[in-house]
Image (cartoon, rainbow, N blue to C red; front, top):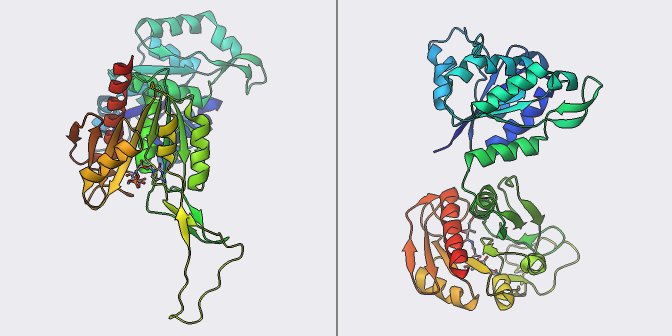
Length: 402
Ligand code: PMT
């Protein structure tokens, strides 16, 4: 079930930066409820956040709503995390002393989820003893408070008080939401999408892979603390945040990039649909349309490198390699052959003819087969869940190797 993050925006100039944060959180498949104080709405309009979060922005404790409870208690009840960013000196003071005189401060009091406070203000205000004591009070009741950055502030002063980089706030949020950090210290390379082989300067051979499966694996691994390299062919899915993306075009290019990075990786997962054929001779000029429907165009195709097989030849004993098998018949039999010919630790077989499995879907139906011949078939689940199960297996294998 999607988790819900409340983003409470108070009246500081840095509030415009929170638009980027909301947009990034939405890409994580989180529900985002934006609550703005009246002062915040003077800096940036609720419409911006309504558009980015895909839902009404809550601004008014007294709004004439039939569902009045939703306006404060109701919001608080839905939250898995409440973030106050930017948090002004005034709002920090209110939180520290239990003052609840507007919608956001009432939500803070009614909330039982973890709270992350991201102060941003003028340096002297930040260093003021009263503000520091208020921050300490918040820390004492287990609110997580981020340190502001130093630099040139909007008020012209240089010093402490700048909103930390959105990247850093995002990372802290993801860490709070995903305390499972079982891949910390590990480096994982994933490939995704379809490779493309040029026919001529405007046409190419590709396949139906959207990149979703590989992106979910990359995103899950990053959430679980891994350093992730995503080697990405053509794809229609949105690139996940927090991973290093290396875009590639052809199977040969993908192979070269993956071989270059192989040695530094603890695990490699091949979810890309790599084209098995390329043109023997790519045409330098655009092929002309046939004048006659009876005319035939014959193209000579030759094989591309088998990337996982190449990686399998050079694999270190401590490295885990995982492949997929996209099958339309004899699923288990074909998958077992690929497991052995590519020297994989396990293979994820998907029968791509099944509804809800394979190319372009948000779900998949997979079977894991390992070297000992153990077979685990999973029911239809989201690609995100499949990704989590694959990583659980990878971790189990890593632990066995230790
Ligand atoms: O991207 P989506 O739309 O989410 O779709 C997901 C998927 C269907 C693409 C994915 O679940 C999947 O099955 N990926 C593997 C597709 C594939 O190429 O399967 P294969 O059975 O032809 O290849 C077996 C394995 O060898 C794969 O891990 C493949 O990446 C790898 N391979 C294949 C050919 C080649 N030349 N080099 C390779 O490394």
